Amino acid sequence: MSTGAAISCASIIVCVDQVPGGSRLRFYPRRGPGGRPHDQDRLLHVVRIAADSTDGMEVVRAGALPGFPHGAVIAMNSSGKNFHVYRWEDVRPASPQVGTDGRLVR
Image (cartoon, rainbow, N blue to C red; front, side):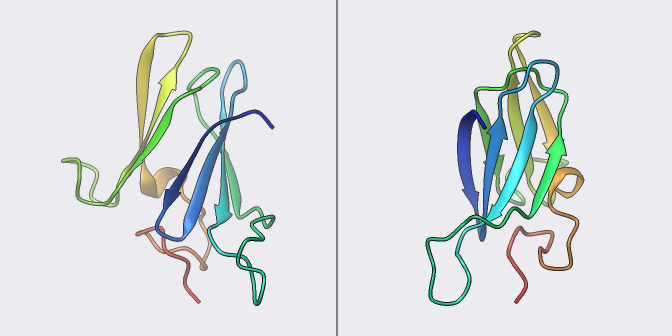
């Protein structure tokens, strides 16, 4: 995995695979289970995005951008030399373990 960025959002770490033709966002828990707080090996979710060979990404908190009440992921698109903006609720892990605010539900 070529990780261009790793952004922590509440209880989730978001990484991006720089893949030509469409990058992939990977979501991991910020804290490991039990007595292993630094063990973030458990992959929660992978989602393909249209941004090409992304080497820049930002996760924006809820309420920071008008029209994005739950937050956003902004990814640099190499081929178009522009940015793609994704609603958090469209890319976040669709798991009962993860709320719309990005926090892990225990």
